[in-house]
Image (cartoon, rainbow, N blue to C red):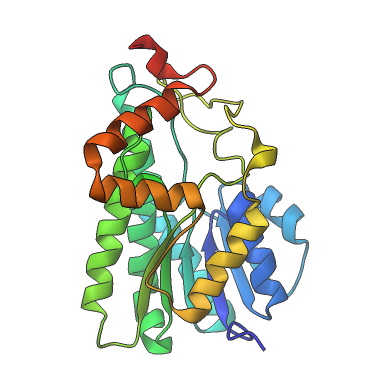
Length: 270
């Protein structure tokens, strides 16, 4: 039997991609699941009216929305055992060209959304000696060109969670983060361009990427095993270790990789 059976799992950004898969697999493992998203109709369509699912409209960049979301979870079930900070957006634009509102939005959602929800859930997670997890990225270990705001937000998330994990060492609360590699989802379709509009089309062949379901399964396995961190995919692990051991070489290899993307913004520099 899964250790998630009868536990209350809270997931931000649960209407699509990894978030939706996390919710579906948590349900399959016997958990009660609360999901939030900006589009309540989309959430409800995804999860119908299951009594084991609570759907809440919330924008995690707003502290009051995060507090209300967690409040509704506790009102319904009286506890929280796992918080999965999954909500996030990306970007694809050179820093030179990007409106600063783009980077601010990424920090508000990816970093502050994690902080707000974690703060709201702390009394209940401490009581249950539960798990707080952040769905980060390889961009949280290695800055990626054309994604300055995204990398900054994920570095910030990981620094916050690492400090919190150290604070929580003697409380029974487990804090971790997970860094998927490229995963099939809509995050690239809604990634922000230089002016803040959605990219609309992905530059990657989504069919060749890890599925959201496989990624979510690995995340939940890690939560159940209380792993410290998870870095997924061979490419992701190579990027992290190469950046530690041979950072100058990593700069060149990462630049070349992203230069070769279709319509790469780096082509401006050559």
